[in-house]
Length: 181
Image (cartoon, rainbow, N blue to C red; front, side):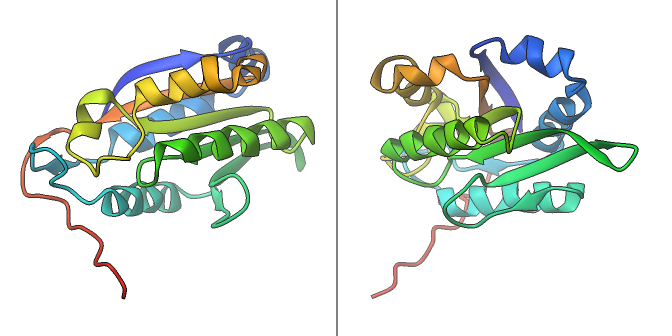
């Protein structure tokens, strides 16, 4: 995949550097960049749940990341030094749900930051181009920035990073999830 935009809030860039989290941050970028995704470049032609499944698999296979399925941050990784936890990075992935769920992701990050469970939070979303090829209510980078800066501007007072991703090029459609009845 490609990374097309990165937006840093509340000194998150400096905090990543100052707290020695650069390796963790670079690992997130590598997880994204090492994943190949080709899809049908037609409006709403691809399944977003399949994209989410692939991203989750990349985090799982990277090792050391812990996943929480519901009610918390999607992925966390701790950096340890001499058996003591030094810093923790939290990652929320929002590629397969309604854009208004970005608020929930921001709240998860905020709560975890306030409780001292993480030191910096990341939200990964499709960029505006990729979003067109996913279901119509899938969030985009533009949505994430709007929610962070306008709808829930408190988000800009926390060390949060928004990263937008784009597929590698045209290909077969990503399978859509079958609807249960």
